[in-house]
Amino acid sequence: MRQAVAEYGAESDGASGWSHAAQVSAANALTAIGTVIRRTAKDTLFWEGDAADHIYQVIRGAACLYKLLPDGRRQVARFCHAGDLIGLTAGGGYPYTADALTDLSVVRIRRADLDARVETDRETRRAVLRAIGEELSLAQEQLLLLGRKSAAERVASFFRAMIEQSLRDGGDGCSVSLPMTRVDIADYLGLTHETVCRVLASFRAQGLIATPDPHRILICDPDALAEIADGDAQERLCA
Image (cartoon, rainbow, N blue to C red; front, side, top):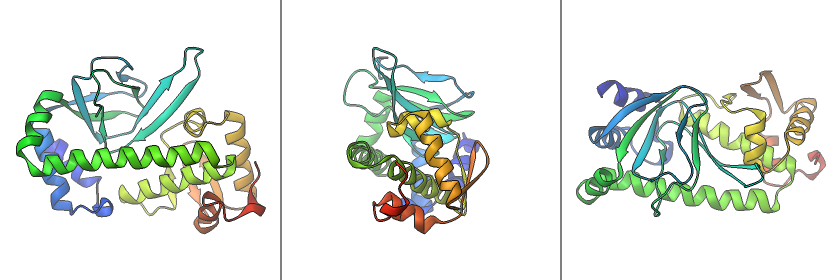
């Protein structure tokens, strides 16, 4: 258990508004009532519709939350990283499927145990409220992204979010790890795989990014990407 908490503390920072001590305290509180489990890349943590008897906190690695339509089409709802809570729902079943994108370590917490801890522990209560707030903010951003933004704006917005994640993980925000595939990105942005690849090629041609390998992006011009994400650079948009 101590190793799990150490991993969490090493991979988190104060970008959320919490002090490092508060983050570690919340991690300790959740780890104390849960069990650390590990999954390999592509393993399923739970399926949509399964009984929502557990909550999961990511310690290391990344996970993908998605829903499948009856015809097989997929909509990725969120990519989860260290510190994120997965499975918070008001219903009795999970509203999405959760798959490991990489080798994944999580704390699995019984929902009843978490409910009891929230009633008595302030840091746990803060952690849950913060997670709910983040879910709401992400859902609102996703509505804007899917409803109003162009393909280039969607991809630029995704890169901006990944830059922020890189900074939270202690990186420099210039070399961004992408644990997900291009298909995963397309399903998250509501685009086709071909459109995502076309936008990436355009960004490379404009000198905005470099792609040394499929799972790493070098951010060469973050200001220009931010302008595209905000819809302030119409002359750069390619789709």
